[in-house]
Length: 115
Image 1 (cartoon, rainbow, N blue to C red):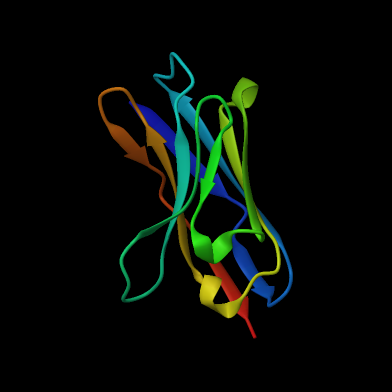
Image 2 (cartoon, rainbow, N blue to C red):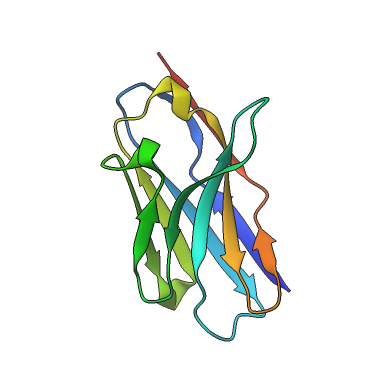
């Protein structure tokens, strides 16, 4: 089993920044890809950013140039730096761990951006 704990969410004004963290623990025997997703009320969960075990990254078009995903493998932690936040970025943000057998999700952290 792998446990994921997200942190760093909160209420922020439009144009400001937040940094989310996701710490993985448990049965981690090798570096795996990880990702950030988000789900706004009444909408489906969607991919925000993805990082490979080697540090390669991929972003949803709606966050390109504003968000940056990174990882610290020594700490089993992945980060999401969110700049120039917009009200439409308001959502619960979830961390995902792509395991060899199954995937794992964190409990989510709320990000609210006021206009």
